[in-house]
Image (cartoon, rainbow, N blue to C red; front, side, top):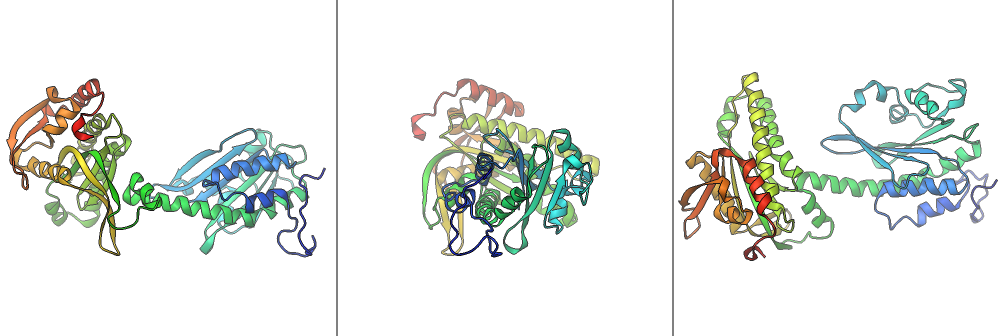
Length: 430
């Protein structure tokens, strides 16, 4: 059966040695009709569906990508016949040291092999090497497996594999057709992977919302918008003394532990960390989400619990416990690009940010780790579980403002009260 209609290839003959050996409809689609699809996993799924429609019995396919990410070493897309979407799995750094990885086709190809063919029905006969995955695939009914490198710019190598469950496996001409797709698929996948890499790096350094704005074209100085947001500013206490008294590596480890304790709850509950400055951070919870105030309070509650656990660990290691101060306010902020002509920062500014910063500084004076403005307390509807500390003058403000702290540090109770009362935000924040 002719599995793909051949397409005229000019004067070049099939035996010319030029790529492609055989121009096919699926190759034309890959080169000419995928420009409108942003995501490589969607292209990969459709590629395998088209292969099956053309008579190539691919029953399982994987695309293993090495990625640049602070947490992940790599990611893989898995497709099986009948799936409308690929299964996506990420691999943490250190996965490449496991026995499963060390005895895998992926490791072999990343190490330099150009092709791996596993005739699974032969139980090792005719196979140059035996990989752990062969037994798993054979048990699942697959009969043949082939894997190749996908080479990107500057020697960056990834791996694609195809498996079939047809008795007898792939025919040689089918393997040839799959091999012929690789150069085009390398180009198509590199463009998408670089787009995803740019987004990942921007997400890592400026946050997901800012990265989306930048990639959408908000890159000129002064571009931005005004948004209502709950604002959180946090700062570590006595960091200067800590950095002078302890070895550098210990200081970095303690600082990273502190940022993990604070940052993970913020991101988990929908906050966006805009900036790390030394031992401090600035985060916002945009008010376009009705539960922004509740989310912020729950994030603070979990961060406080995480800091308790971190300090217990420090005590066990003979390290100092870490103190912190958090200021919370709400209001309109200018959100956008600020800086010099050649170096921009995507951040928020405005009087509301200044008040949150002044509240954080006030925690040192009143000896309470978390302070909230009356404006935030009223908006969140959690006054019953807060303790009023009275009115305090804040630098740069004409009038003193009333300041609240958690009664008995019951941040979770304040979040629960806010969750019961919040329905919509008051007009003053519209």
